[in-house]
Image (tube, rainbow, N blue to C red; front, side, top):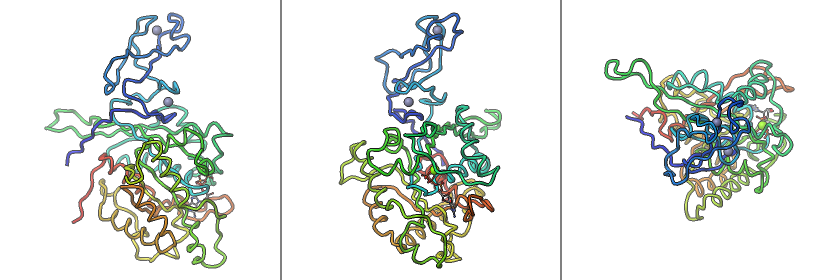
Length: 392
Ligand SMILES: Nc1nc2c(ncn2[C@@H]2O[C@H](COP(=O)(O)OP(=O)(O)OP(=O)(O)O)[C@@H](O)[C@H]2O)c(=O)[nH]1
Ligand SMILES: [Mg+2]
Ligand SMILES: [Zn+2]
Ligand SMILES: [Zn+2]
């Protein structure tokens, strides 16, 4: 199967998540500031009007010094755009979930997994587009979990902590082996996808009129990973053995889902009788904590084979999706499942755990992530970025 990717005719800025026509881009001159006033003052250079909206200009000539510049910036927030923007695809995967659903730990472990295992299995590599991403991933995500075996602290509201507003931005570069007996020597780049992860604070999702960037992050996304803590489900709380430590109950899961759906409908003008076409991966986090409620022979307990096969394993995916959906319904999530059906065209259920253990007093005793890659790989598969293994 040839993977065929149709380039979009717009781009989403991975910093402010605004949507732009491809020609709606600015540049800055990177010439020696001594010799050019535009470079010295950081003047934004606009590309010529009248160009096709479907074409992003590669470069322009500085109006002051005449040098060519290819340093693109977003014309809304003026952040420097990743080099691949406009040439290839750019995707924003939104990770959302209520307070304490497990978003920060999920992102911490997923990025590591993509860098170390998904990369070699799927011929791709993940690289941060800027130093801010490298630094923030290290300090806020990697170091606590992998180096110090500590829990990540609660994500503070972006209203009080501005570093939260800085998304983690990566280029996922896919390479292909040379074909036709060495016509292309070695590997060549077949696609570059810019992926932004924005670790929101659960509390920023608690009201519909939350900050604009969070809203744009959701309604302009190309895929949503909706994390749910099974320990928030009423039936699960009752079924677990007495004495099991339970988190405080917070936002009802179907409230967050309906707010998300309403937000997307309003912003993208999707009528109530139409379904939203952003794929939604509903991922039950902390699946380790409900192990006693899951049949030991269930696929949930086995590792997925996507990575070892180097392709998306459809039969495993279908087993997981079906098993998880019926569990959700039997755990009292009937209404949630129905709402998901009546709002989103394309959705699937997953069961994952970032930690694989119940942390004791802020320490991660043994880090054992399980099935953490499944929802992400499903979204890549839905975007035709990776191939599937057919059901036999
Ligand atoms: N058993 C188990 N507990 C987990 C797992 N992941 C997270 N937790 C627990 O859930 C708590 C919240 O996880 P976070 O990743 O901080 O949740 P969040 O969604 O980022 O929360 P906010 O930042 O408040 O929105 C952690 O402090 C852990 O106690 C997991 O895989 N298994
Ligand atoms: Mg968090
Ligand atoms: Zn210049
Ligand atoms: Zn921007």
